Image (cartoon, rainbow, N blue to C red; front, side, top):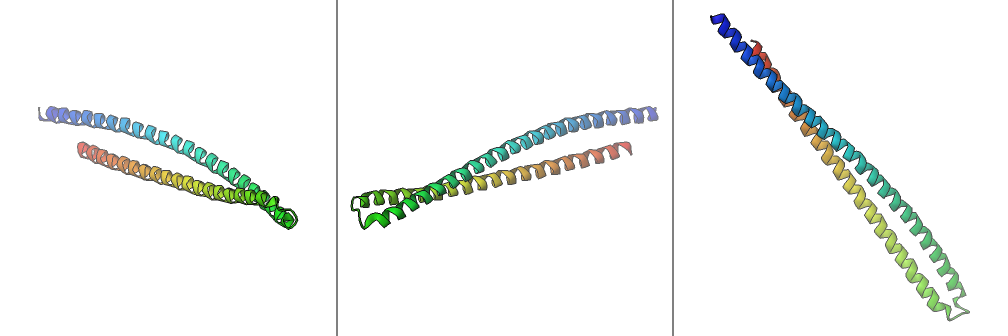
Length: 153
């Protein structure tokens, strides 16, 4: 009779451990799914940030070319200035365009740096989340192993 009660008690504990293990498997699967989703999102974010950086670099190069072209034109017009007074207005306009190009170039560089900073921030958040998930999984596993060991004793 005592043996039967002990066997029934062990069976109940085993059933409870199996339920807990199944819940842990489900939670682990959910967490793995979330991690996979976050990794996919991170990949998309990386691609987006890379594309944005490439576009900004291209824009920066284009602006530098335009600025250089305007600066050459301004220099040429200044050299002709001594003989042609009407050109003075054109030189002034070209100087304004060159100044605007420099301003746009500085803005473009600032935007590129901001995008890069956001990309780094997203990566850091993702890393912290992965660390937290790993720690939580480890803790749950430890608890389940402890429960299983206790139930087998």
